[in-house]
Image (cartoon, rainbow, N blue to C red; front, side):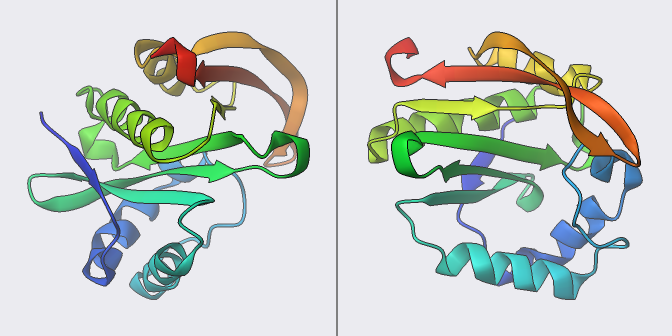
Length: 170
């Protein structure tokens, strides 16, 4: 299935709410998202992304079949890490396992490396999220190691894995 990444549109808020009102997705994301996730929450997030500094925040909707089915973003870090950025993403459950996320990761990394001075993009999926780790590996990211007990999710200390892609890797 083909996918595209594109700038968010306010009309995507309903699709965003539908995707994020799923505990299977929220279990693999950082805390802080409301549940259930409403269209109003989606409008707020989309507005924030559209008004963000476009040299520091590269945030896109993942689309397929003419609708927003997920979110992907690369976020510049600061200070000595100002040419490094963190990647985050999710996709609606009904689109899992179709290669869409791998393609979206490839698209955003190519875009960021072409349009900015970023030299390193990294991601830190939860170690138990083997599907996310596989997405990164298929997109060309290198596994750098396990960050032991690096997060607390639902009261449990969990490991995270560190992956990176360098501009020179492409």
